[in-house]
Image 1 (tube, rainbow, N blue to C red):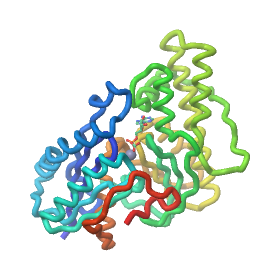
Image 2: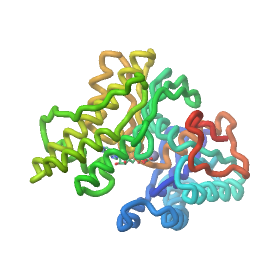
Image 3: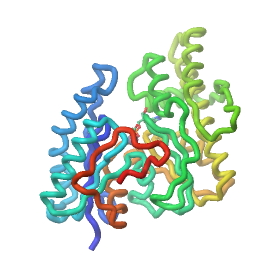
Image 4: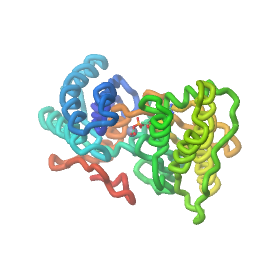
Length: 341
Ligand code: KG4
Ligand code: ZN
């Protein structure tokens, strides 16, 4: 009999619940965004987020069970994000997962949010071919991994300063645009048409594999001071120049990784992977390596519970069952970020 795992994601400002069959077939995936609630404060307010998760979770659980035509008693396991994230927000999800697992008498497992962003490539898709390179580009993380299989990772590089999504959000703020900055800047850059200009970047002297995005943010800020954009055309060009620089920073690191490791696929996950220009740039760059590009559809790139349920089902199949004393961790070790349990 195939597994039916209910996944819960509540690490930041999205409450999401999903039901996944057999670790990869998504039967239902619903997300309640808290964006409007936090926008008046100019950022996510942790306590407000926790309280809203508490309200949204029961509603979403009922909704996904209805959509997937699954009863509580059909579920074979529960998976929940336990790190990283806002501690109060995470604890709401972990407590809900424990309560349901206890009441239903089924196992639950704790999942690392960033690992799940990579696992999203398995959802409603063919299996990922290993060895692979894994690129996570989200609002809080920018990391490149060498992956022998699920659960076997070597960190090749991470960001020294801002994450890729954070750079989009901060630059959008500098330009007086809304939040989240990624989709807004992508749209502006697209309207600019053929712009090849980039900001110059300071190269790391130690040939490190680490990413850096704070330089381009500073460059945009200086440009705005020197030549304030006068009209929409100026804003479009600035967005394109910024995006070209970010894409180059990302593709250069991926190419270096491909040069060092013979892999079969490149797996990309996280909110910034919604960016069509990034997908296209990666597709072009890796063509000559004969490597398969595995990027999930946008609904599984941004925060969602289907990726949590999928990875959770895989963990449960290996017997990785959490105990009722398991808890959430805001910042797990950056050396072994996925070693949670
Ligand atoms: O993975 P995610 O949904 O949440 C985190 O775990 O951080 O990523 C959110 C980030 C935000 O910084 C947002 O601006 C960025 O992903 N993002 C994008 C795009 N869509 C979302 N960045 C660039 N282009 C996009 N189309
Ligand atoms: Zn995320």
